[in-house]
Length: 392
Image (tube, rainbow, N blue to C red; front, side, top):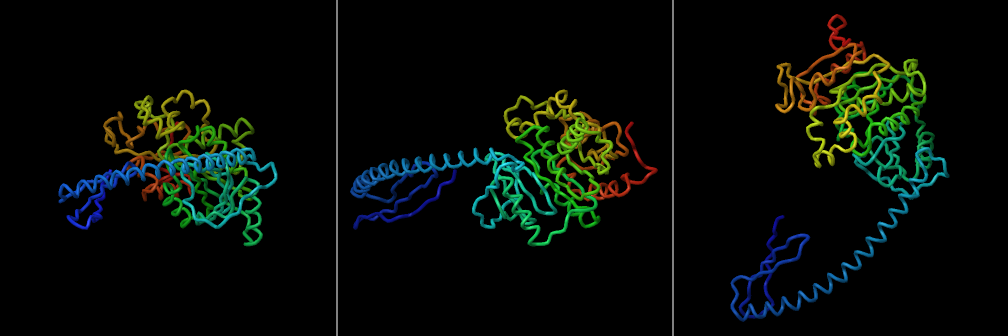
């Protein structure tokens, strides 16, 4: 806490004193006097007593008014949230929206999950209230309400702006635990500049739900990729497990290996065997709070492993480490990227594997990661065909 001194003159006509008010928010206000005689101090004490009584009465009345306002506000939010949650993501009920002013947003962090993507337009769902919103490429909100209303507004915008249907090849990009779209921003910009892929940088509330829930949301997004002929995947850290869970879910429903739309998959720092580092802190309250349900699953690998599939497409792995046997973190045994051991990233079936001298958190935006990712997307190897390091 910091104190801000404010100098005020006393009301006495004689022996004026400088009164220093030390304001400490949001606690009570403390007042002291300086360079003041006995008479002035008496006057000040009387003045302070009268003022404090008024303040207490004012604060009590204000507190009651604030409490009533807060209760009404929370009741409205609760009712709104329950109504919107009842609408469901498929918009099965009548489209319901709310008056909207085009409002700039931050694009969604840990409280929003993508539900539908069309080029640079996105429909997101709030994980607390359950309401939906429609954002453009600048993260400006164009509609909000239930899913059906947002989709209805998107269809209207398609007609008004004559937006072309999605076609060709797409790349689905997922960030890792506690990440955001910004985490993968540089990599996505690099791919957009150097390829003709439609790049979808997807945000999801990585700390709010378990991996299975993230995989279901990913499935909903891909189901709406109408017109897209080929889908590639790029993910960092936890995002790789979300995609592997998605593949496993697809295999239960249909033969994912027969899905001709699946192209290549680049795994960046994937915890393909869990994370020993997470196990060290699995009983730590701060760890549980920050990393959430998905992070805790990394510490209980035996529970999540049966629900993950080996990718049914060509995939390559980019791991981080110093290749000196020690790595970045002295708390992790062997070569590591600070969070994961190189050995924890390996997965049988990979057509290529490479280790780069980057930390876990720096890998997505590293120039070498961008170039390796592009090369694998285009050619199916990181360096050259004769320098592959497949994992059997």
